[in-house]
Length: 220
Image (cartoon, rainbow, N blue to C red; front, side, top):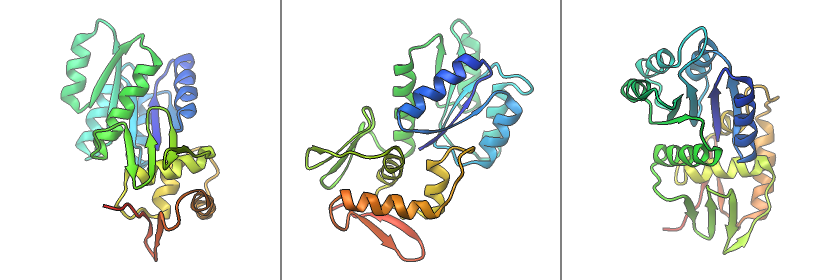
């Protein structure tokens, strides 16, 4: 899963990047509204953390432009604690949730997990596909109740597929959603990660749909 952080305070932006990367996300950071608007318009983010007080272009204007252009990714806005009017304006502009500064990182992570679940049509923090269960809170994956050891990129590939179980996911979509913008992307490595996952998961769990991509085989 790939996230955008739009935050101009360097220390907070670094803390957010570190916490979200540790939670298994690919993370891009923009320190001004102009860059945030461009990235959010061009890249397929699974969620955005958007500070309203951005330089060059304020966060509210960024959000309004995204929504006017039909961009539907979940957006969590950050506001000053007592700025209730910012919260109202943000929600009216199309934000999906808000968090007042200062905040606890665990609460931000929980709110992002909830937004991503709802965007994928899920209500539970656990995503199950046959014997495979992914707990989005802990990042833990089990097969028949036994913990599975995965690398960071293997987890991102499996997480994206699990959030879209039943759907065909193209290799290019996986490439766009598991790498940050500054990473040297190579779509051919997706095949390597899928091959490694297949060795760790039940036989036939990840299906190849010829010419289209991959799909999880979830029993009814």
